[in-house]
Image (cartoon, rainbow, N blue to C red; front, side, top):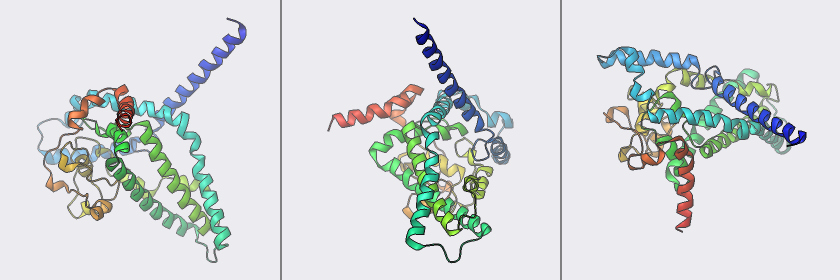
Length: 326
């Protein structure tokens, strides 16, 4: 082995180490990034809400045993959640991170399109007006398109093969939120970037460029409220329910747990992210009061997803097998 090969091997090792280090930093940053669901503040607020549910449950357990049962947090399903969270952090560093700039690129071209076709706005929005309407519009657009993509994940066989990874969890914990196949991760990020780019460009035009683009990346106040008010309990064993009238507007944590039920009556139900109105309009809404007990997973197919590698490979194999039979 000559000096050049040694140097090349060292550089390859150094680059690999750097990528792994950045992936680890990204994964750990989720606990400190206020835009992420598992930020320490949102975990703490979820614990407070869980305590309120615990007090109403008349459980004989201590609160800590109620909140952290070993059968959930140390289950095989949970370790798959943790593994996919770490692996997808690597995927984001390698493939998704570099494309975040696409959102700003799209925003620029949307703004240019508006200028060319409609000229400068005669009455531009002020900074306060822009942020107010931008926040509301972005929240609704994100939620509705998320519902549509989620609907497609359940109804289109090709997409369902990848979405099964998320539903294969036989126990739920906050990290189950990140139990998704990398292909679904790509689809979700493409949707998010498209919505961000189009709406940001539109409001950049309406405000006559009064707001720095980075401000648009700030934490949405509605998203902040959603995360603060128990979003982490959606993937958990804590049955936090809302009053009946409110569950027609917002998806409660228990309603999302119903979505993970292996009962065929609950398949493709409660697919909304924050808002329940889409499920109400399209007939996929199930209220908490109509369900007593649920079990999680995809029943007879669970064995196909009982390891980290199976969750990555099974969807690909299923699609090739399907294509091979046509």
